[in-house]
Structure formats: structure tokens, C-alpha cells
Image (tube, rainbow, N blue to C red; front, side, top):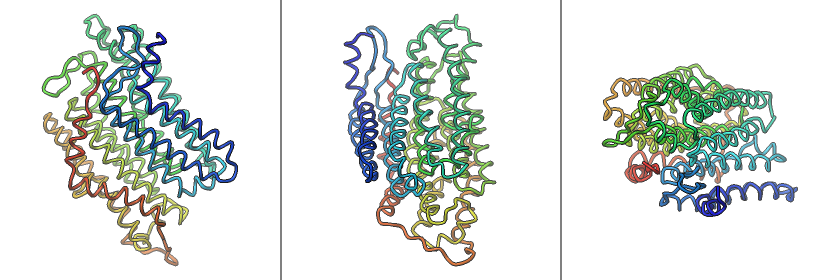
Length: 499
């Protein structure tokens, strides 16, 4: 790559440069600041806000970055990428706010610098994942995210389950990474390129070995499926979610999943699309992605929901719940249309608030009672009505019941499925939502319909935590009633550069 192309591309990665600079500043500040480690919280928030300012610029951009003469670049800067970067930054902002009040993080105060440095490393990797249009950059960015998250899963060392979560995450991640890399090598062997746009052009040739290409596509999907917790690549999720600090669990459930989904969208829509007719993607006949996504969607949502029925640990239950929600979004992806893509964007924006909110309530209660077991939540809805009602709103929204925003998210996926005449999948999705109603309502039963043993526990919510909780509750309620701006925003953000 010529030097002039390198410098010309720098304006397109301003958010990434800000994140990298913030990471360095945090490392240096951690070395300088010896007593008031709390200042690192504010430095981290400032870095996220600054990166968000430059992400806003990218909604109006359509460009390739890091390309040589006559070739499309390794990075694509478009409105869809900006939308998902905004989701990652919003999730990061809330997780940083959670970190102020997390007992797990505050008890490991000496590691606060490493904690935020690793989080910024994850966010930086996610940004490159979101924009990557070259398989080498895809792999490198995924490794940056993975290596940071392996350490963060076990950073507190407060119990054996933290170390266990980190070790299991590392083992599963290493296996999926190796499988994905083998798939990338096969694609390079078939096409002679790692650029998704060039791969698309070469795959249009009838001489392409479809058997090898199918194998390579499935191997690459293994790595992506691991990131989005799609069955059967989900085995790490419940153990890691239960063992990691709640802040990291919440971050993985939203930010990591969103980066993985946009990577899946780019991989299929860019590398395998032939043309688009009336908003429906006509894919190259090399790989039957529609059938693959349909089967994995049913498997993922069904396994996630039925496994959640038996969970007594709330973090573990929410882990299986997040697997089920990945299944719902895979159903929208299986439509292979712009309508399905819009549904995914709407669902993710709503999922961010309701899922982070659920984890935040679990964290606040766990801070007080020292447990995440559902039996220990008996009667706590009366000990703190504000927390109890907020938790109820988040769980009802996760179920997909009106008038919460979760209903709107599932409604748009349902509409996309019906428009594509995928009636069986839509029925399976509705039945899975009914199953999820049981384990979500089970939590509310413990909160409001069971009496606590012994003396009642007093749960007070501090003013800053109440503000954060309202910042999550209000969008869940408002978007359930007035969702037109979000829908229009999603429609304007589905542009994938080049198609």
C-alpha cells in the first residue's frame, strides 16, 4: 500500500484513533495516579464521548479506507457501520457507568487501569470488526476483542468461578479462532484474495469449487457464530456470563454480539450477493445461506429458551436468554432482505436498553445481598419497589410483550418473516417467546409473590444509580409507544457500501 493511500485513509478512522489514544492515556494515567484511581472512570467516559462525536460524522460517509490504486479497501465506512459503532459506544457508556457502583470492580481498585485499558482494547477491536471488508483484518480485529475479553472475564479473581470463566473462554475462543482461520485460508486458496469485494467478483465464475467453498463458509461462520453465541457454538456463554464480573457480562451480551452480527451481515451480503431484487438479496448459488441461517436460528432460539427454564442463577439465565435473542435476530437475517436487516437494527437498539437494564438491576441487588441466585431474590420487589418495577419492565420487554419496546423489536422481525412467506419460522419464534415468558415471570414471582426468610432487607438506590436506571427504563417504555424515529433511523442506516 502506497504511503499516500495510508495518510488519505486516516480521516476515516478518527473514532478508532480516539479510542487508541484513550487507551494510551488510561495506561499512562494509571501509572501516574496512585491514590485517586476513581479519576480513571471519568477519563474513560471522556474517551467514549469523544469517539462518539466522530462516529456521528460517519453516518454521512460512504468510502473505502486503506486501499491501493484500483482496489477496494480493507475498511468500509458507511451508515450501517456507524449505526453499530454507535450501539457499541452506547453500551460502553452504560457499562462504564455501571462500573462506578460495581462491588466486584471497586474491590479490585488496584486493577482499574488494566480494566479500562482492556475494555478500550475490546472496543477498538469491535470497531475494526464492524468496518472490516478484508478477512485478514476480520481475523486480527476478532483476536484483539477476544484476547482482551479473556482477561476481563477473570480480572477480579474474587472466586474460583472468575478464573474458570476466563480459562473456558480462552479454550473455546482458541478453538473457534483456529477453525475460522482455516476457513479463511481455504477461501484465499480458492479465490486468491482476502478482500470481500474481490472475493464476490471471483465467486461469480462458474468454475468455483462449490464443495470447498461451502466448507470454507461454514468454517468462517463458526468463528462468527462463537461471537454471537449462536448454537451450537454457544457452549462458552453460560459459564463465562456467570463467572465474569456483571459489568463484563453485560458488555459481552450487547457490544460483542452486535459487532459479531454486523460482521456476519458484511460477510454474507458483500461476499456472496449476486444482486438485489425488490429489497431481497439474490445470493450466489455457491452456499445456501438461507437454509443454514434458518436451521441455526431455530436451534439457537429453542435451545436458549428451554435451557433458561432450569436456571437458578440469574446471570446464567440471562446468558441463555441472550442466546435465544441471537436466534431471533438470526431469523431476521435468514430472510436475506433489507426488511430483515432493518428489523435487526431495530431489535439491537431496543435489546441494548432492556438487556443492560436487566443486568444493572441484578448487579445492584447482588451488591447488597452478595448473591445472584433467584431464591435469594424473594420479596426484594417490596424491599425496593423502584428496582422491582424496573426489573419487571425489562423482563416484560425481553419477553416481547406490549407496551414495551421489546414488542416492537419482535414485531418487525415477525413482519419481515411474514413478508418473506416464512410462516413456519414466524410461528416457531412466537412459540419460543411464549416459553421465555415462563422463566422471566418466574423471576417476578420471587420478587413480588414470595416472602423473604428472616429479617427484611432494605435496598436503597443511590441518586446516581437511579438516574442510570431511568436512562435505561425510559427508552424501553417510550420506544414501545413511539418508535417511528427509530424505524426511520434504521431504514436510513442499512446502506452497505458497494451494494
